[in-house]
Length: 169
Image (cartoon, rainbow, N blue to C red; front, top):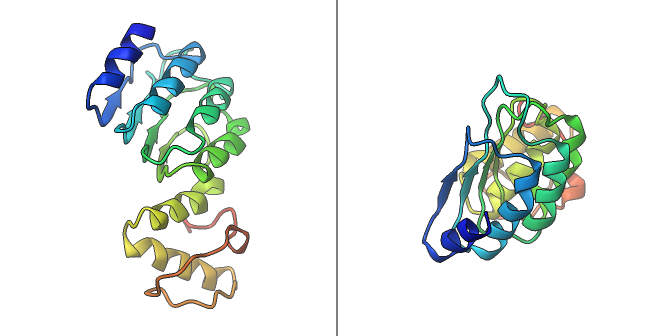
């Protein structure tokens, strides 16, 4: 894997799909190092075949989290069908999102409501889609949270002012 990491680091690659390729926890360190070194990768798909007993687990998510701290490039992380990823990974995914620019996480094994506000904040930080801001504004009405904002204002919202879930509702 080390020679593959070196080769990929020399190429201008923005999307990597390793889905259905027996990626497991043992590969997370190498993948993390690649993501730290490569300044172009914006999407990585490490989904797994749904009928497999292998794949990435909570341990793999914990390992990868360390490498994505401060990553300003990666925007999408696809983890679907990794059946060993459980709700124990939610704090790690949240930490990963808060400390990077990730704005899309796909993982069908766990409820992602707890990380949706962090994803929305990254979408705003990245300058994507005013509808995200409107969604937050609508959510504030639903949960009776008062923000001194208008959905079209250019603002910063402290993380402490945003609930951990509810964007999907």
